Each structure stands twice: as C-alpha cells, then as structure tokens.
Length: 240
Image 1 (tube, one colour):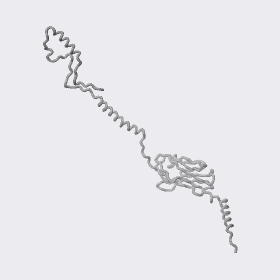
Image 2: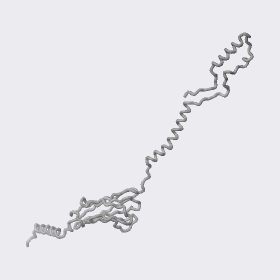
Image 3: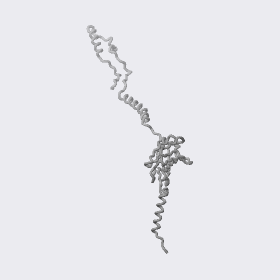
C-alpha cells in the first residue's frame, strides 16, 4: 500500500487557488470604506461627512458612490446623493440645495458637505462605494450625526453698548460729585447786609465838630470811607 504524498497535495491546493483567483477575481478582490462613527454639530453649521475608501482596483468611470439617510426616529434608509463620473446632488426633499460633493476618487475620497445643519438632520448617514470588479469586502460605512441647538453668544458690540449705558452715566455722576466736593458753591450770609460806602453810621450825622474845621473834616472822612474796601463778612469766595 502506497502512502499519499503530502508535498504533491499542497502544491495542488496552491495551484487550485491561483486558478480560482485568476478566473474569478471577485473572490480575492475587496474594497474597504471608512467613515467616522459619530459626528456632532450645532444648528446652522456646515458639516463635512468624511468617507474614504481603499480598493485593489484603480478607480474607473464605473466607480459609483451613494449616500443614504435614515432618520433618528427610524424607518428605511433613503438615497439622497449619487456620484458616477460626476455628482448628482438632490433637487428636492430634505437635503435639496444643501449637499456639496467634496470627494476625489483618485485619492480615495468620497466625502460630502451638509450645509446649514438642522435638528431634523439627526440620524444615520451611510456611504456606499462600488468600484467594479472590486465590489466585495466592506463597501458601506455608517455615521451617526447629532445636531444640537447653538448656544447663545454675546457679541462684542452688544457688550460695548451695555457698558456704555452703565459706565457713562456713572462716570458723569462721579465727576459732578467730585467737582462739588473740590469746588463748593459761594455762600452768602443772610445775617449781615452789604454796607454801601456812602452810608453813615448812627450819630455821625449829628456829630460835633469845631466850626472852623467842619468842612475839611467832612471832606476827609468822605474820601476815607470811599477808599475803604466794602466789608462783607458773610461772603465766602470759592477756592476753585
């Protein structure tokens, strides 16, 4: 009884696999598509949905890219974007006018941009790439998009106006108070009246003077009173 030769058996298996791969390349060729698992954005943002792929075959005009969307509430996915030699963005529906092609098949890029994201865009986006004959492997990948309301922000102009309304009146009031403290108003005493230079004191009109010198003394006293500065003890001059 003859024993089977193990060396010949291994050689036959290798030859068989080679022939299968040569006549049916789909069994050995594969394509891999990758997308981020999650994306987060604020309402109104432009979201870039990255999609890259690697293929054992060079991309040709037969390569296609499809993007589909399934709402967060559930339901079947719906294709809204298609690429085949050129892009075909949606003309109606939820994403009409809001999708831009950002891909480059020669570099393994199949990305798109979603403009003006809304809360209704929350859901799962799927990127699917076909590059015949390399269509097997992992031709699809999923991304979950979460859009949240944008947090309110205070603009610099609003802050400047608010500060102007608060600080400017306060500064004016402070300056007025400081001015009153440093420069008090003139105060006039009401207890004493201003005495005119031509007024005479009581008894002066009836004073006794020598007959010969009456005229000269009256004249001298008049000029002395006229030259005397007015006395106003109740008048306070400001020091400012």
